[in-house]
Amino acid sequence: MEIKETIQIRDLAIGYSGKNQVKVVASGITATIYSGELTCLLGANGVGKSTLLRTLSSFQPKLGGYIFITGKEIGEFSDKELSHVISVVLTEKPDIRNMTVDELVGLGRSPYTGFWGTLTKEDKEIVNYAIALVGIQSLHDRMIQTLSDGERQKVMIAKALAQETPVIYLDEPTAFLDYPSKVEMMQLLYRLSRETNKTIFLSTHDLELALQIADKLWLMDHEKGVRIGAPEDLSLDGSLSSYFARKGIVFDAEIGLFRVENEFGKKIRVEGDGVRYSMVCKALKRIEIQGNVEVESEDVIQVFPDCFLLRMKNQEKRFDTIADLLAELQ
Image (cartoon, rainbow, N blue to C red; front, side, top):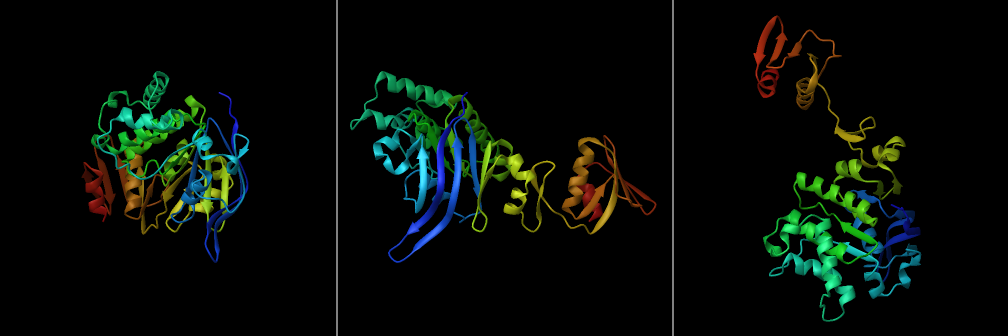
């Protein structure tokens, strides 16, 4: 797979032009987006992620700077030419009824089929291939209104693939999904970036998943602007901590993920090992007790394969579950 510079952004300014004033959402954005990579745009609500995505899609004009796609400035494309270069999957659930999966994915061929939208044999092969890429072959004849949110999102991605553009933008593709479906969707997009060598750029609020799956992150903030890099580099240089850390939340650089910061009211020594030991320590944090094998305390919890033994003030109590143990400590 050959990774190429698909999108070059130079000194980009985004925002809105009104009759009497111009509202600048972000400026001075200079970056490159590559093919064969999954790039995730992260930031708080209202920071301008959707504005940036709409500007990169040419849905709204830029205030300044340049956006080059496959070497050509975005303003030099006609609408028809752009439909051969960029496909977009939006956040909103498509309110579509009485249309099959095949028919909806087939709409991705509309830039090539002309006014009547009649699919040739080649168009149908491309539609079938797009459906196979996202793994929804069993849904060919299903009506869109009968699909789950995850299935519907896969159909919209298949439609974008059928459009055969080098660039795919997605706005919050995991917004309406449960957690297992969110993971599956992000893994699918990562795999597609590799198998198709397309440029896949998406906005998301699923920070933890993006940290684990994305090749590149764009961190967007009103005050700090846009910071770009691999998750690991942004972890090492402190960007992730400074962009997202809030009271009660800290970025753990050792594991590369965020965690809840607890204030401890008391301590207890926990003796044991393995998963059961880790789960006890985790549960104790939740009730503001610092507990691990390094704590010096006369109160001790011993973790055994079949029970938890609490020793406090010359008393011993046995518990079968962590919930019962916590109830006693509280």
